[in-house]
Amino acid sequence: SFYTMYNLKPVGRFHVQVCGTTPCMLRGSDDIMKACKDKGMAKGATTADGLFTLTEVECLGACANAPMVQINDHNYEDLTYDSMTAILDMLARGEEPKVGSQIGRTASCPEAGPTTLQEMV
Ligand code: FES
Image (cartoon, rainbow, N blue to C red; front, side):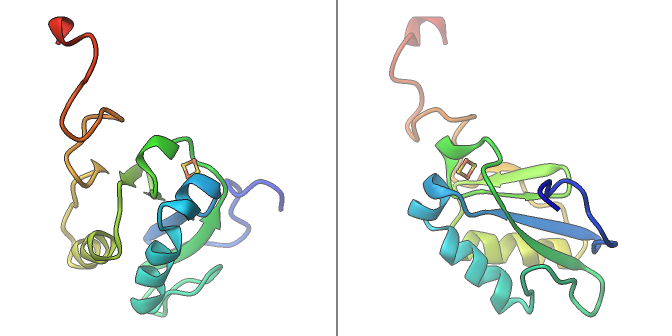
């Protein structure tokens, strides 16, 4: 049970893994968890419709874009309560939300773009 990558029982169509480690926690993972709970999810459980399973996990390696979640094979980063809610709504409707940064950053570049080595861009 130490390894969260092993699921000991079937998960829903979307396995929502919310990072709660310090960088994500300091940047608002509580809001992300609240967005999930407001959609009827509970930690360690699958929704009655089989759509979502919610798991809190340790660092998923995208701390520079905290807070973030992994849903199935994709990361969603730079999240807020509203953007997380929108992602969950899109998934429930069968749509494909934009993966990665939700504020338009490329990887972990500053919001306004690179600040160094600009001649190489
Ligand atoms: S602390 Fe959340 S991705 Fe590293």
